Image 1 (cartoon, rainbow, N blue to C red):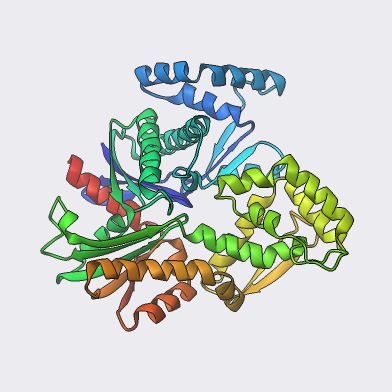
Image 2: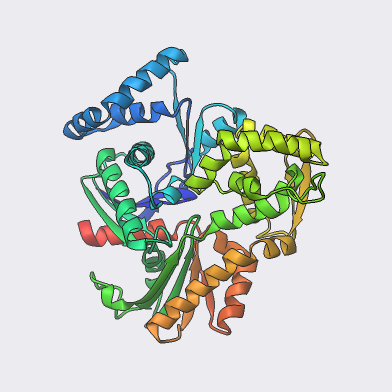
Amino acid sequence: MYAGFDYGTSNCAVGVVDNNTIRLLAIGNNQVLMPSSLYALERELICEYVGQQIPDDALQQNFLSLRAPAMAQARSVRTEYDIRPEEQSIFFGQDAFDQYLSMPGEGYFLKSPKSFLGASGLRSEYIQFFEDIVTAMMINIKQRAETDLGKTITHTVIGRPVNFQGMNAEQSNRQAIAILTLSAQRAGFKSVEFLFEPIAAGLDFEARLSDDKTVLIVDIGGGTTDCAMVRMGPSHRNNTERQQDFIGHSGERVGGNDLDIQLAGKHLMPLFGMHSSLKNGLLMPTATYWDAVRTNDVGAQANFNSQQTELRLQQLMLDTTEPELLRRFITLRDKKQNHHILRSAEQAKISLSDSSRSSLDLNSIVTGLSCTISRNQFAHAIERPLASITDLMTEAIRQAAVQPDLIYITGGSAKSPIIRQAIEQKLGTIPVVDGDHFGSVATGLTAWAQRLFS
């Protein structure tokens, strides 16, 4: 059995062809979308979970040999913290969020691991750690999908952005694809292929075209934005080789997460002392506040959690004129609630797609704390990443050396009227068509898997 696998930055989805119809499977508490998140009682237990769950005997034995020291460390952690073998120690999707939100100062929580896979300068132990995280998630998602389907899935097409990172793009892409390939194989997929996500996003739309068109596909994902200029329509859609139809493309590590980060930094972090004054008349340094909300940046998170940052914050407590605000920030850091702040910003972004104002309840972080954000404030907060997104569109058009007949936009953040307005302002009167903002990539990957494996 074959499937399309959207291992997304924000959400994951799996599609199959069932009775000649593409169907997305229930993988997240009876939902077709599963948040891309993981929570472990202790991070050492992630490796143990993988070692126990790899279905292929040869791959399992190879993994256990490669990770022997880590497996021994996991056994020690279980003994030290009295974690019984039958006790659930790894949680995925919404369950991971629920565990983190109930116990933010404990355990290990990671959201959007796809954002880290192409990071430059990762040491081998970090690459192995991300292999284990991705494998654990893929194993769990595959098991859920097969439970819903009632069949074993052996072949898959996985979506990939044009570029996982902006810098050292080719090296970054090789590293990320290697992690995803090995993880998928360890999860039990016998055949693994990849397809550019903007191409996948447009395949379902192409099936509905009655005339040939040159289409600018804009896929604004959680971690990346990918744009592709593609010749589409009846003359093209049955081709198994589409490279000649792919006439321009651009991609960068800027997406929905970056919108959340900007919103959190500019409108939530001031509630925790950002922009407050010091006794010498200077403003509070902002670097640590931005490190807190850049949860998709390995270096920023290392800085935020470092002992040097702890000492700096202790000194700033002596220097600030508003110690109660900085104390909030220190408590947030101690309880590892920075992911909660990003979650709140994301919820505001989603709410502002349909409403002009969003009220956020931050009571779980600080008793009685709340704030209201307007759509105009959101628009000002995201000006920089939004400019990068629209620049990617013009770059794809420049490469193609032809204007698109229409623009097809997809991805969760593309629902925002602010983003749609920016696209229309940048590209003029070209018609803009909305796709399935959450399921189009998985649907297209499934259609491509059918072509390759049926």
